[in-house]
Length: 105
Image (cartoon, rainbow, N blue to C red; front, side, top):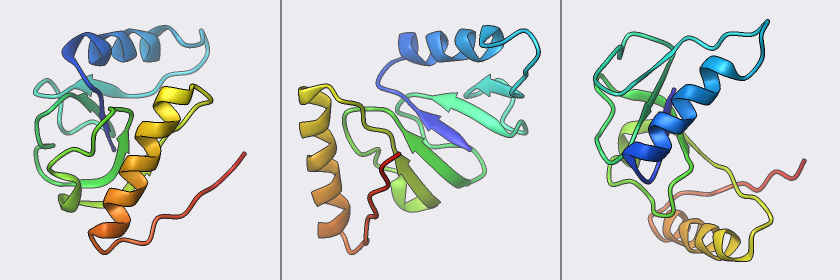
């Protein structure tokens, strides 16, 4: 799994949160370039080393390497600006031959 962020700062923040999320839980992960053999890698801008089964995009734009991933997940919250960006990404995927699915919780 590769989690794609907008910046190094956000990647580092997510890295820290995964270490401190809960005292009794652990998600084996690393920042890109520091443990690509782990189940979860967090990066920003760079293509995942060795391919990608699942891309979780939390960046505002579609990463250029999305085609190299088997599946793509876009997380969208209630913020109006982020929802508009997500709609743009949805259209991008559709315009590039993908059939995005929407899942509401």
